Image 1 (cartoon, rainbow, N blue to C red):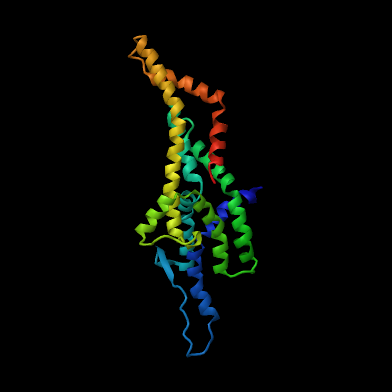
Image 2: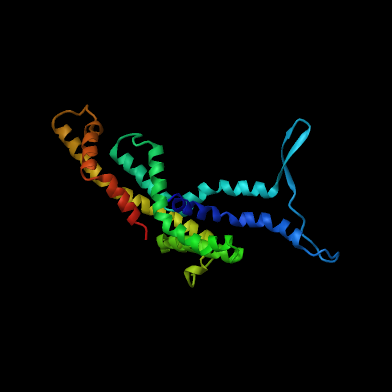
Amino acid sequence: MMRRFLLPLLALLWLCAPVLAIAQTAPAAAQTAPAAPAAPTLPALPDVTVGQVGDSKVSLPLQTLLLMTAITLIPSALLAMTAFTRIIIVLGLLRQALGTGQTPSNQVLVGLALFLTMLVMMPVGEKAWAQGMAPYLNGQIDFATAWQLTTGPLRDFMLAQVRETDLMTFAGLAGHGAYGSPADVPFPIVVASFITSELKTAFEIGFLVFIPFVIIDLVVASVLMSMGMMMLSPMLVSAPFKILLFVLVDGWVLIVGSLAASFN
């Protein structure tokens, strides 16, 4: 079960593989190059001095430095290329609509968004693992083929959520015309279009979530005004009614289920 939850995260880590491939290509070429004097060989990547202890310098292989840099890109990949953006925005707007301040806390919302993202992205991660990562680790395919097969499911997932207007906007910014097929769309344009589309979709869902709570606020404010209790905050009085309504309709299940079903 733990392996199934880790597959989407491994697929995201795989997106950083080009950096690692560049870091490993040079030393590999230097080791496998022929020993003939006329054949040029690529030099190994040098060590990088990262500190000094006393009189001794502390060096770090450039390959390790690139690996550590690639690992730091995982949170950005999580935010940019998965369902996390839409889910966390909707949950944040829901908390604001309820008027409960910092309840649930940010840790609770992020935790719920992460596990819901794993649930949504699990089919994509499993497909990417089966098609690209597993055959490459078993030595059945080369790196270029593995990269295409691994990013293919993630690319299809993002393209299914992208609006055509957003895609054409970024294509125009890049100086491109209309694309003949989805495979012709460059990966950076897919990611940029996906992020903007997710933001728009998240705010649309948040608007629909806000409507019933705004109606409750208006009704409570009107009742307080008619009773002459203008000094009493309507938000304070309406908060229990909004929480009661949300609990009676089993709001968390509705929100989570609707978010998971909103992805094509």
